[in-house]
Amino acid sequence: DAGITQSPRHKVTETGTPVTLRCHQTENHRYMYWYRQDPGHGLRLIHYSYGVKDTDKGEVSDGYSVSRSKTEDFLLTLESATSSQTSVYFCAISESAGQGTGEQYFGPGTRLTVT
Amino acid sequence: AQSVTQLDSHVSVSEGTPVLLRCNYSSSYSPSLFWYVQHPNKGLQLLLKYTSAATLVKGINGFEAEFKKSETSFHLTKPSAHMSDAAEYFCVVSLMMDSSYKLIFGSGTRLLVRP
Picture 1 (cartoon, rainbow over the protein chains, first blue to last red):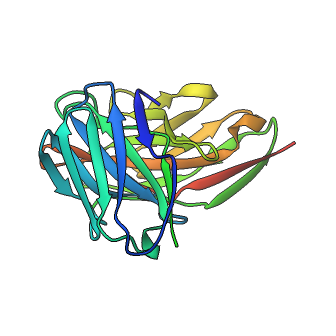
Picture 2: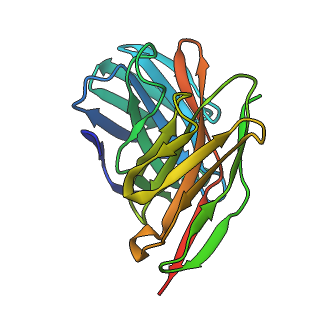
């Protein structure tokens, strides 16, 4: 999985509680992404980062926030989890936009269940 | 607007027979295109990529795809299916936005391989 780890790998939480998912990379890639995967939707981009402290929203960012204080770590936070956020979450990385062709490398995923 | 359509949600083949997974894209410029594979409970793995160098692209595990601009297609093929090919396959287009790449995912095709 291209030097990408995600933690935790599985989590069950209750509605209304905060949750933080962590993505860690050892590739020193500039770009990092958070996706969610739901049946029939492929992967949808939540937030992404183009450098330390530089982040932006994706297509399904409502209810999520992110932070990146170091190149290697990208955190996804659900401030108050809802059942609609039950999903599998994937982190991805890619090289600088001036290199490569945009391919991304994915972590193993975190399965989050909100009860 | 960029989009990706995978024409079949499920494809079932017998082991040893050819595989064809269909993908059409919509893009206002010459895109980068990818196929990713996801085995059960795993992350996504890059299978192959098209970057305008050659229209017939070879990937891992005997897969290949042909870029046809006139048909706006990027179908994935394999001459002989193996049981280990059973997985979900995603056709993806890469879009440059705000100095970073974004990936637009198709909804996926689940490949079943019968003994």
